Image (cartoon, rainbow, N blue to C red; front, side):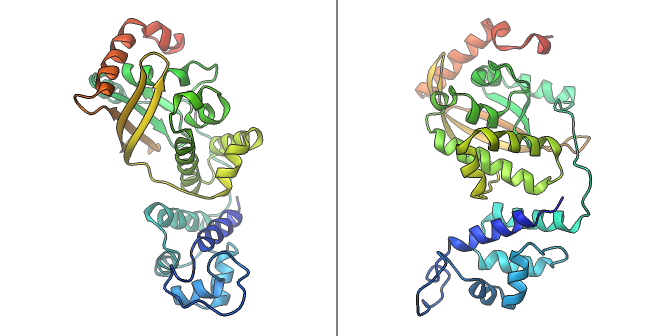
Length: 295
């Protein structure tokens, strides 16, 4: 697979957002034809020739040294996630094209991972893959995300829910921000795993049916998901203000899995709502657990 288009669009979009003033350059004379820096200005900031940077922005990135990539990242003022994405694109370009990798949509979760999840009775916890499928969860995590599990498709997938299910706009109090994060996570995953067939199928599906997804995907924003806060409007317990932390989960087969844990601040209405949701989950396990997943 040739990723030159992704490289070109990513670098051009990062260059377009930086003004000469932001880059510490004196404003040039005459009318500017680009919204941000010119290619020759990025080349000066990175310490390379204009012809070399132009070739790089056209997607010819294979074999470029790490030092040069670092210089370009500094010139374009890339953040941690964007810098990582640039290096991932370079690694993908250096590898020969091959048949897209197809993994099983149902990851094999080690029993110890499920035991760990089940031991977290006061927090909503789940494991997701890079495609944002939920592949394992504890009871409270399934209850919190019950709208995702209510649909006919399996496995539950955050991107499909957010862009294809009308319930998502009610479920997420700040749907715009949640949608932006979801697409940025998928874009970063596409840089890490450009040959993942199921990821490409998901992106193709969402791009075909959702203008909101297409617009965000074209922005080439990327994100590394570590921690933050999110608000939900749950159909059973109402509004929940929760903090989350996401951790990489080591696996025997090197699958790209992450553990996310949602908690509520002690002494808040959200903590009471989360406890109520836990009680609801304990009494309605059959309602929130698909028959195929029940013990």
